Length: 116
Length: 106
Image (tube, rainbow over all chains, first blue to last red; front, top):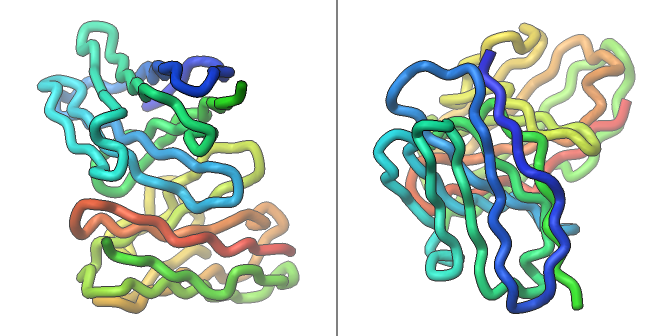
């Protein structure tokens, strides 16, 4: 059964970086994408981009491109998303999800809090 | 960017009722639309993709319809477990965007 397991919650200061991981369990096919989505308090879900777990191809939301890097380790089937130069409005729940169109299943979510 | 607008924002219904949630896109997205259910403190759960295809394991009381700019999610025979927030997402062109969500109270 396909399952995505994310790393734990993070508390960061403004200007710092955070790297969230997403381990994929139970998949065997080659062309597998992981999409990252976040939801800030009181705001709707925001699509951040996706990465192909095998080939490393990426597609970013241009609104976050430049501060966000998605990488993957195909051996451990783990996707990573790093957000740099954190600001208070990066405070959100960050989700990874399987797929690059419709999304499912999703990871459990990682709360990233940016506060001085 | 394509804007996704859902209505209503909140919905109150009773067990056994039939409810419909609407999602409107700011431009033609053909049938490139998904619906999700999210419960407090949980990750979203995919219900429907390609506007009307039911995801595996999702009860048949859920159905989706529409194309172009107007879409709907219908739940027949509401169950207490259906209390959740529902939202739509297009995947027609980058950047993908989500609706603001409809909170269903039972």
